[in-house]
Image (tube, rainbow, N blue to C red; front, side, top):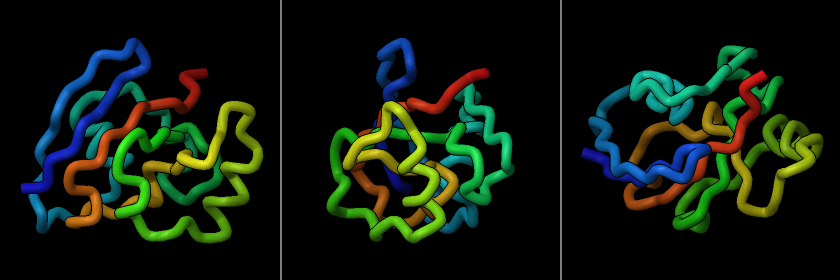
Amino acid sequence: MIKLTVVDRDNTEKEIEIPEDINLNLMEVLKAYEYDILATCGGIALCATCHVEVLEGLNQLKEAEDAELDMLDYLPDGGNNSRLACQLRVNKQLEGIKIKIRGDLV
């Protein structure tokens, strides 16, 4: 199991566990755990409604690709530790990270 910590918009914090062999991205997992994420584009890095801030473990993740970086550039609250949850595949790189959900709800 992969364990990571999720901080919701209201600052509630919860550790979640994800099976290692699941073929999903982090956005899909967060939605399955009933976090309020719009995911308007369905996970193809076109809307940024799954924007998360990586509070711990950013150095463990693979570098963001161009499509993700382009979307993050448009975010008024984006920063160096911003990522799109739809672009983070569930794998051992996520072990122990801590994220805060940031994407819009409108």
